[in-house]
Image (tube, rainbow over all chains, first blue to last red; front, side, top):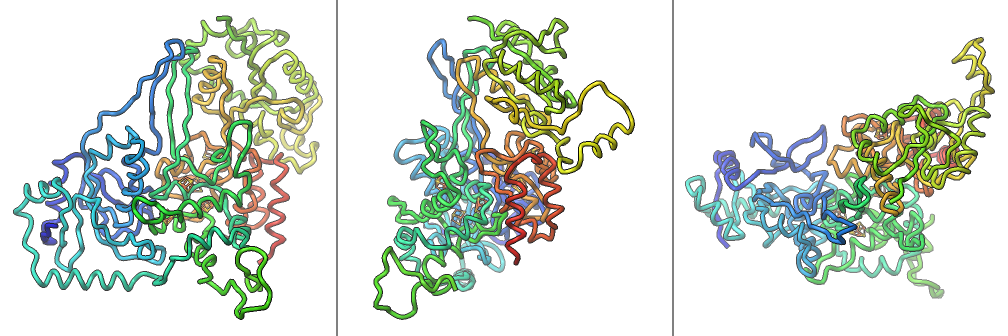
Length: 363
Length: 261
Ligand code: SF4
Ligand code: SF4
Ligand code: SF4
Ligand code: SF4
Ligand code: SF4
């Protein structure tokens, strides 16, 4: 991999030059507390130390809503409406969000490529930036805290600039074309980079092994946590619509008034909504709020075989943006017995009837 | 193709729903597809006695005559669509549902006299079967077009069973419930308005009514509002504006306030 240094005084020039490659999107403040990736005109508005964006970067590739095709019933035909996408640059992704895009790729590119996703993914230039975790972050536990690939450039903050990792030929081109803005990496920079990474590692709230999570979730289907926490849930779907790896969508056909033509559209869906589990005959395989609530926990913690990761990348959005203040991490830790003891402290003679015993949970 | 026969009927309302649709440019496209049998706002030769394929009913049921009228409509129509919050949820005029009719009457009309027998406002569904609903105060043009378009191809339109929050998130708004602690009713209100109010930084007051199918969680949201310092009365008052007839509302809120701390 190629490494270069971008001195602090050149950062805005660099950002300005990125616009040569297409529209530039970057994290900006959209309200008192929240951030989102938006098109930026004035690069001075870019937030380098944002915590997390309310919309995940998947929004650039898998649009929140989009038209899929136009149809005519009388002609029995349809015409896909795939946009002509111009190249664009998304600046400022955190490592977890880059992993999230890799997860999205395994769904939307690898097996049955989604044309709408693909055209955008091919045109999007990804520039990552380092971050300091806040109390909601747990990417370290998901092994998504350091991106090895999936970016064109990745900027690591140094006291006097950025150590830049170059990830792709496009990344090389961007650097080469503005080579005057860059310097060689010095041994001091390497020390600073190490220092930053060390501090970052120490800043994570939890340092523990979540290896047992996947099977404990499956075993603890009757744990009281599910009832207690799903009772608090508003079923608003925010945890899914802010999640960088939620990939479900809902489609709808919208006919015109001519009784013949129309369009099919899709939008992001959420498994916290009733219709997610609704099938023909008005059957619903997730008929209760509890079952819908559980589904997200199981889905997000299941195993993506291609990447050897869980579907959750630990970005913290589903907790940070939950209007009911439900903590995903806390609930997972409860299941793992890390929040409070969930099993009898001593081995008793009694053999638990189902799964794990948690007699001590309801004190 | 035979023309679809359409009727538009008004009960007690502000007529805003009808106006919304009568003003649509797209209505012209309907002319060779549909016969308007009854719609006083757009056609003088309207007749409530005629049979129709689709009956749109706006307004809340607020007099004895209106009960008779909707029963007649039900008999003469193949599909009955309740239009707007008045017809679907009893409208904002049901807000004072817990007060005495006489008291409400006096407040509005004083000693004035009218020819009809007033009743407490009620949703159409309290009297007849409703097949489809066009939510809103007023409803969205796009929902009207979608429903009609879908009926015209011989299919059945989908109901909206998810909350305003979904659209709010799709639009990338900041969440004012989380950020400012404002009592936004988005989590329990039927989507379709494209989260109009939160998009202007204004908390949703629920004008499209609570989501059906038992997925409007008044209790969970009340718990949140309570945490933010709202009293039971304030919460009830706010949630009742457009949901006074919802059978779950009080029960769920009582539950939350019985829980204690
Ligand atoms: S964001 Fe929170 S309240 Fe909303 S559906 Fe998810 S867990 Fe429930
Ligand atoms: S499940 Fe939550 S923490 Fe995990 S990736 Fe999704 S939003 Fe982030
Ligand atoms: S099932 Fe739920 S948690 Fe899983 S991707 Fe779909 S919306 Fe997200
Ligand atoms: S602002 Fe209101 S509608 Fe929007 S996400 Fe928050 S609670 Fe839901
Ligand atoms: S946001 Fe709420 S109050 Fe505003 S239009 Fe939509 S449903 Fe009505």
